[in-house]
Length: 350
Length: 164
Image (cartoon, rainbow over all chains, first blue to last red; front, side, top):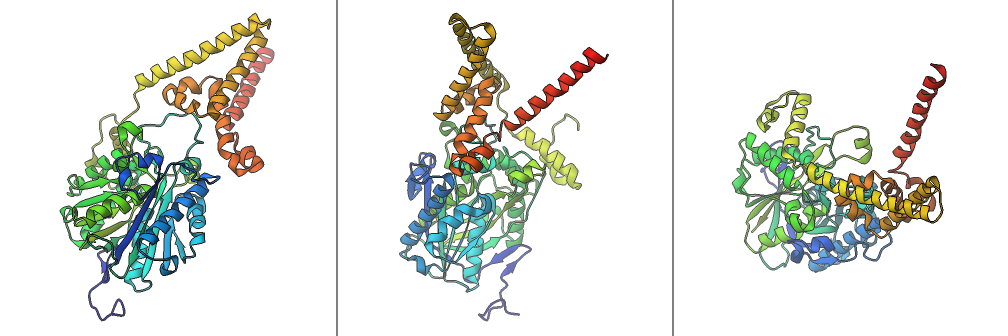
């Protein structure tokens, strides 16, 4: 039975939880807008726009986060040489309750919108779904975006900003910003090599019973391990098939745990693992403890630094799998654990 | 659970989910760097001590102004609460607490900060549903269980003094 309109007998479903695209979408543009702290970090000069004011002139953190997302979307659309009308769908999400940052951010853009929640794995989920929409012939151009805001996240999940508490070493620092990519069924006119999403591996929720929201890297590492293992099995490749295997915000603690867990499955990623949370901040000078976190951590790093390496030929192929922790304040208070998930996309330069 | 170290192989090989999760928690605990207890204790001692010394200074000062000891102590409490709220409002308190830890938390300054911080944060959601609802979000347990335990101890005291 044909999987699509084209007369093709090649399967699209791979293994147990993966897809290989017949018409791999092109990433024709990307944008990254961040706050001041991120701009001062090691990747600061890669970002498209750094906003010094964490409120961007708005009244509340939530409105500011919406503005970050709106800016990221607009810059990406502009870089692609398109208008809002050219974008068929927008797929976006954030950390806030009921996704208010995304909804209010995209409202003015006038683009048909799918909101989704994947916590910090949202960028992986958004790119996955956008790619599926394009490969299936359901759209020609889709924008995938996500955002997070340090102050908004602290208010939602932890304490008011001025509250005097000490953060443990395993705590992470939520990245303020937004990252967006535009996927298309046609090659774009960006300089450098064309970049395509070749396939996706969708994560399962994996829970090893961590209850400590100050140690999210440890909570999410098993999910990343499961997705990587499933992906390598589904596609029948080894870790060195990829120049980099990139996680979102496992941080220093979570990354060490991930490498350990994978070694038990005879998978060694110690040579090509990269974690956006470790790269985005300088641990010593910026006092960010275990590293960066939040949806924007993986999004802005991917949209700026990672895509640049692919465009310029430094890397040929990466596996990008941001991780998320699917808990809420309520679930935590009610004594539940923090279930993790990781969504992987295969991104390749031609 | 025994005190010996868990290695990750044991975690992966464990078939029973509950046991596996327990072992994973132990393994994570081994892998996670801890804040230095000696460093924290020194910080708490210094900052807490300085705050209490400042408090004593104020108490003595109010007594020289003519107040009796109890009144002077009350004025001291008011002064420390005021200073704590002021420092919270201008964003300095958090920096002090990062180093001081329990030294800032345990004196009355900690309580004042825990009320002032949400008041600042939730102003954006309005006077009633923002500040009104959320102002005691951190201090609430302190107020509730402080008063409750006073009542329990009062009851015990009453029983022992008058009934036994």
